[in-house]
Every structure is written in structure tokens, then in C-alpha cells.
Image (cartoon, rainbow, N blue to C red):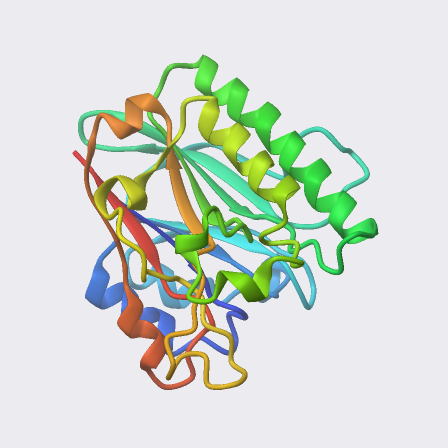
Length: 259
């Protein structure tokens, strides 16, 4: 089973590029972030014609997440538990029914948090605490699960081409990285880092200041695996070349393969 995550930065802007990548990469399941569309505005027919089931949790103009799956889905949930007043569309999860076993896939778009300090950063940390609670619940089932998405977290200095310029940014502040480590310390595995420990691998390049041409990137899109999923891990990667294509997102797809 190949599971991917892709912050597409607007489904309308990526309506041509996304199907091309899907046809090339042939993931079984994809979680998308920043679809920037209400549910009824998502062009589901394009992806249904490619053989994907489409589930969305949309929001007008910004945020919004979606899940595309070639495999059957059960127990679809929208929204991160823990705050009934939170209306931002940042979480979608479902059980994917594979040929031999089921995998819980949780797609997330973690808040950016800038400017920090401030209300947006407070929301980011509170959201991460709520996510920790949901991770604990999923871990308690002792079933394979993948938490995939745009975390807006630079975990370590090697995850940035120029870590020194991020020291005051919400993506790299000590509190952010500590909250991320708390997730890992629950027993989750950073799939990409297990397969590739070396620096120089990124999933985001800003549109400004020639970041892509200079490979001035950061790695903020992650797939964290429960122990049961980590036992099934056979491959993980970043489709970097997608960033160099016409009308790209500022993110690229990241993916894992489970046995």
C-alpha cells in the first residue's frame, strides 16, 4: 500500500498538475492539504474517473483537507477532536481496507503559527496538544496507522538548508519542536528519516527569492507511523522533481510504502 501526502496549495491552481502526478506515482491513498475549496466545489469527478474515492473536509478560500483512495474506506471522520469551537478544516481520517489488513490514515494540516508569539502561535501549540490526544487514542487500538500531512514543523537543523534564518519562526521554535518530539516519543516513527538520515532533503521551497533554484528548502511534510505500521515499512520518499514543473505547489508529495 502506497500512502502519500501532498499540500497542493489550491485545488483550482493544481487541477492539471495533480492528475499528472497521480498517474505517474499511482499512490493507493493520498491526503491533500490546502485544497482551499468548500466540499461541493471540489472537482471530485476528475479523480473519481481515475479510480479514486474522494472524501473532503473543505473550507472556503483557505485550509481544507481531502483524502483520495483507490481502496475502500470505513469510519471516515472530519475535524480534530478536542475543541468544538474550532471551525478550521485541518483534519480528516479513515480506515483504508487493504487486501490483507486495514490501515488507519489520518491526514492533517497543522497550523503555521506565525507570527510568534501571539494568538496564532497559541492556537498552533493547542492544536498540537489536541493531536497528541488523538494519537494516543489511535495508538491504544494497536493497529497500523499513518499520520500524514503538512506539519509546519522543521524537526531538526538538518531539515533546513539554512536553519539559522528560521530560529525565530513558529516552524522552528523550541516549543514547536518539543511538541513534535512528544508525538515521536509516544512511539511514532518518522518514516522518511528511517530510510534517509542524511541532510539536504526538503519538501517545501518558497516561491520567493529563488528558493527552488538555490535548493533553499525545508522539510515540513511528514508521515509518522505507529509501531504496527513501522513494522510494515518498505520504502519512503519525497517526489522533489514535482517542484520544478509548470505551475507547481510550493510543497511536493511525500510518501511511504507499507507491506
